[in-house]
Image 1 (cartoon, one colour):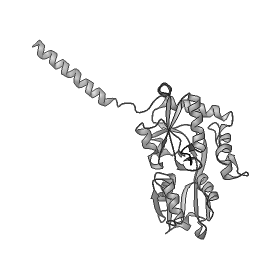
Image 2 (spheres, one colour):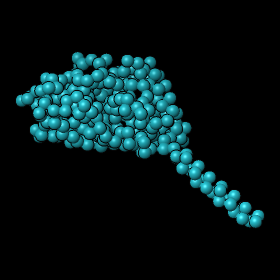
Image 3 (cartoon, one colour):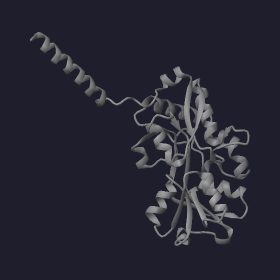
Image 4 (cartoon, helix red, strand yellow):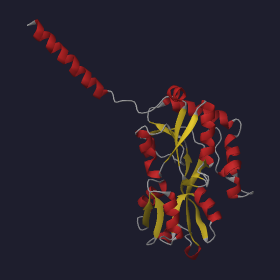
Length: 276
């Protein structure tokens, strides 16, 4: 009888252990302490979105976001490991713990904020549309019945789907594919952040940004896994501290001034100290 009772108790403890394991899902993010202990922070950036995140001819990551990432790693006292990411996968890489941080022109939206935690902003933007000079779109209605190129998982895709259903959307996973489609004439225009299309049009004669600002003025911010308050708080403190030295204006001068030109206004893009 005693043996039977002990067996029942033992089985009960096993059952409780199993239930407990399922009730407490394994943490998929790393805290600041864990990142420092490991000596490396994994940051997702674009590899094909010049001048914000791209790989140069020497295989090295460059751009506005990368400049910021390098400073983050330096101030954490760790090395940085870059993970290339497509626009549609930015939430996924955080939810699965593949990266610690996303710095990939991640526009803050209510839907995204339900899945990831955004730190303070460091950029601001709206949507823009660049189109072929032979058929310049000056307003969204000019695109009705025509093909507009967008990248999957972007605010441009959502905006036109919800507000201009008569515009035919041609969607791509990668920005490089999207721009190649525009160059090949598979669409009359392309929409993404106005900061990017303005830079792209400068480097590509024959194309004009006919719509420089579309939709609401949004902010771009670093994103971490939902619930990673350790890294989130560290990032917010970091952004505030960097604002005191005008870090993001220095970032602009180092990575964007040559693209936008000597008369461009850094204040139209840069957010210092997380304060709009």
